[in-house]
Amino acid sequence: MRIGLTLDCADPTRLAAFWKLALGYEDEPPPPPYETRQEWLAQFDLSEDDQDDGAWLHDPKGVNPSLFLQQVREPKLQKIRLHLDVRVSEGVEDGRWAVVTEAVERLVAAGGRRVEVFDGHHVVMADPEGNEFCLC
Image (cartoon, rainbow, N blue to C red; front, side):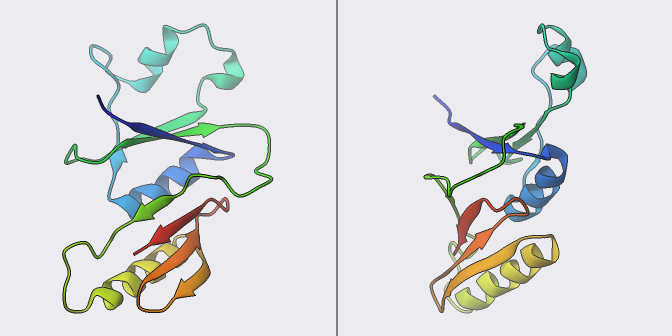
C-alpha cells in the first residue's frame, strides 16, 4: 500500500513549482503505457475545463508519498485540518536550526510566507495559496 496526498488549489502549475522546491520532488510520469499526462487524461470523459487542472509530483527516491495538486474553483476559506511537516533537518546534529532557517528563506523567496516561528524548533509557513505546513 502507498499513500498519496491531494492538495486542492487554484493554480496547480504555480503551486507545483513551490512544492518541488520545498520537497525536492519532480513531476510524476504518467502511468504506463502512456507517454504523456495528456494521453492518460484522454481516456477519461473530462470536460474541456478539466483537461489541465492538476499537477502530479513524486519523490524521485520513491520514499515519500506522492502529491497531487488539484485545481478547484472554490477559494480556501479555512485552515485545512491536515498539514505537512517538512523535515529539512532530519539527521542533522550540528547546525540544525541554520538548515531550517536557510530553507525558510528559500521558500519565502519562492512565494511562501512565515506564519509563526518557534525559535530553535520549527517554523509554521504557508505556501503561495495559504496552505500551512511546518518546516523543521
